[in-house]
Structure formats: structure tokens, C-alpha cells
Image (cartoon, rainbow, N blue to C red; front, side, top):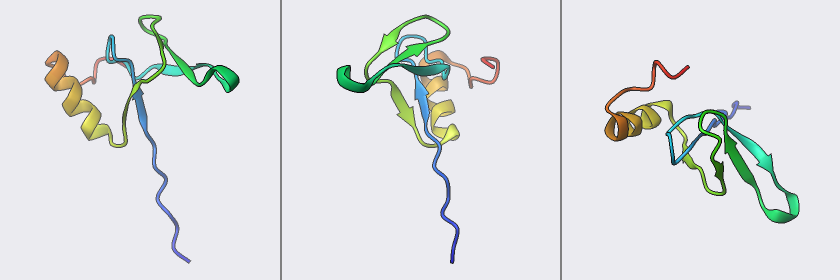
Length: 70
């Protein structure tokens, strides 16, 4: 039996492009997220499946690679 690869997605704040986006509330109102860096409450965060894709997006939008964020 082959092991399946685990897919990890990155949720990104559309305001500041931070990856520190966490669930804020959900259930009946639908899932919402909050950015821990700018405080923005988000209904639809940007999502990436690969870290390389996130870094390429961040480089295009901000001119950096995101390594200094953490």
C-alpha cells in the first residue's frame, strides 16, 4: 500500500500578504479568517498549495521572497 502525500496549503492575507492567517469564526456564518499581522478579517484568503508558488507571488507583489516575515 502506497502512502499518500499530505497536501498543505498556505492561506495568505490579501491585504498584507502574510501567511499568519487563522480561523476566526465559522459554522452557520461561514468560515472567516483573521490575519495576525494586520488584523484584517477575511472571508476568502488567497491559498497556495506550494511554498514556491507563495514565494513567487510575494516576490511579484512586494519585491521580496518572504524569508524575513517569520
